[in-house]
Amino acid sequence: MTLTTVILNDPELGRLLGKRGTTSDITLYNRKMGEEIFIFVEPSQEKLGALLQAIAMADAAIVRVDALTPEIGEMLLALDMLGKKQGLLILDGVVKEQVLPVLRGTVAEGYAIVERDFNAIITELRGFSHESRPPCRVEVDHAFTVKSVGTVVLGNVKGGKIEKHMKLTLLPQGREVLVRSIQIQDENVAHAEAGDRVGLALKGIDSREIERGAVLTPEPESFSVSREVELDFTPCPYFRGELKTGIKCMLSAGLSYRAAVIKDLYEADDNKLRLVVEAERHVVLIPGVSIVIARPEVRGLRLAGSGSVV
Image 1 (cartoon, one colour):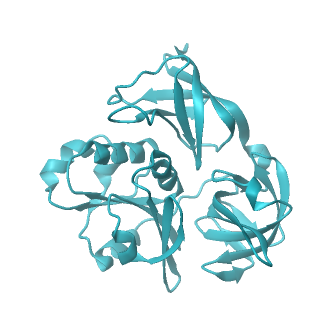
Image 2 (cartoon, rainbow, N blue to C red):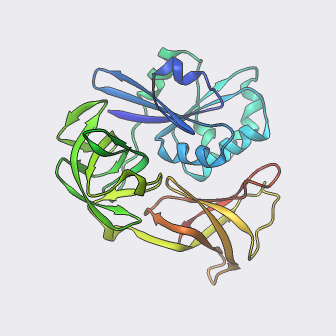
């Protein structure tokens, strides 16, 4: 079993739980215990994009609550918008009765409270499962070139099975690539399944052409790639910024985080709110994955709302 967990508001916890690995605006920690692999993802606390991407990568969450601050509130709302129902809370200097009103109505209402202890956390995580939904794909979070190997991407298999020598399509480019080799925890394997975190050596593409949010799939017909996105949109009731035609925003879809402009906002015939945005570059739209609209420059809560593609 492999489980990927995002750590929020606790910059030291990753070191307690695993060995430090890939580091950028998102830092990953790894722990292998027999047949169990635990991946911990820690985003830069200053970057909203990294926060949303790290949550999108994860199957579960650990949130340290040390005060009832707007920053903690934003993290909890992001988890709710992205539907992360599996999670743990570490209470530090606050008690359960203080926190419950903030959690009410969000996915975090169902999170268990746990001590900040390695064994206690791992025991709880063992009760969780990795997210798996079709179509077959790897969602890429890092890409680089390795001498004598070539292009390597890191990412999570979110659905299906990836095999060595399989031909995949890289989206949004639509380029065909070949999987030369697969590694899990630095060991060569013949295949990887949903839940696994992998390193793929690819033939047919330069690493400089791949960015975070790219998708590798044998089923490109199952995805939409577009600059214009129309959402069945639910505004966040705590957002105080403007949402109107012409306003600039950020669109977070899977691991993509794109500058965009609001083109339209209207009430449809079914009495649902529709939001139409145009991103600066093409976005891979993953079936069933919520999209978040944000305005990072707004004071206070920066999450304007979320929705599904119409």
